Length: 307
Image: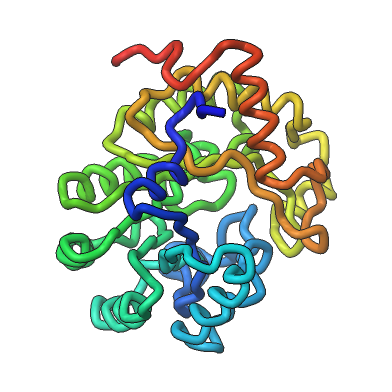
């Protein structure tokens, strides 16, 4: 079935003439919201252990993580290519010399064809962007910015340590360098409602981003938000799966067609997840979303208006 939105996986498959898999790597970075530069304790929703796969452990070294990741996936897709995905914490939060050593160790692996760096918008310098621009002349390079919300009051509430202005500045500074620009939003953070979140999508999509990742708020063990939820659950508005499906359709309808959609949901492991308990895997949610878009005769950009 033809997708009713611009699918990032299909884009990558066409770009590399075959299937491409992102391999999560722990590069041994930390976060300015944990080491005291911006704050302590990290974002209230964050527990990195809940989304790092078992093969992604910094103690094993970057090359070993890649080898173990390939073994993990290879039984299903023997000929696929791989992107080195520096996912854990803030992937640009180190000196340029350290970043160069870790990125280029990954890119030197014979099965790696590109680099994806997940990071915060407030820890990307011009010096680092210049270096990534040079890498992008030889490899596929994508920087994924954790925007999370465009609402500054919400960002303060979750102890994010930066506002939307920093996201806007970083995205504009990255544009025009041959680097693919990704952005990430969480829907359902405390203080947000559906209309403010849709307005946030509009604001973000006015910027020169190429790829958008979405997911529903999850309450995860080992976080400050988990403590807040147990203390006062009525302060949280957690989506049912059906409600979230309807909301994502509205998001897709108002997005410009030029942006690729990579992901709609995230599912933390059962041992970490407190709520909401959907029991739905990512590919199952995507299949339901595809059917809902078809049933509604809807598509990406249906109600998009150039602003």
